Image (cartoon, rainbow, N blue to C red; front, side, top):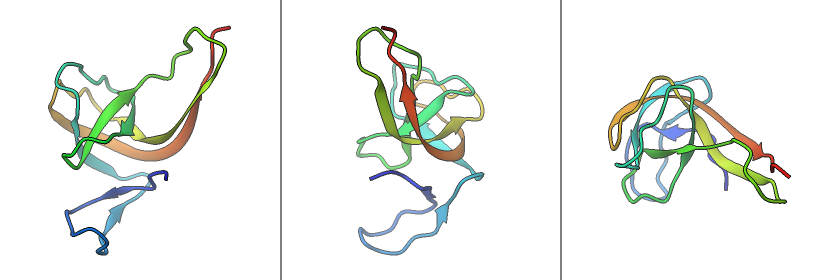
Length: 102
């Protein structure tokens, strides 16, 4: 499964919900209370039980022989988002391939 947008309100599982799509700016929460998110960082959905949370996704090449594919990228940070804080995200879902450094 890959995200296509962000639900703009909470609803029961299986219920219809309005969805903010590509180009919309929404409030999100940094799921990591130990790491800041910088403006421009790609953001990915996560398995946090608190809805509306995102994590920064590094796309820099790393050592190893295998590239990594991230298909849960939902957008990028419009401004800095502090540890465990909220901030703005531009919705731009896409698949990003991180190259290897070998």
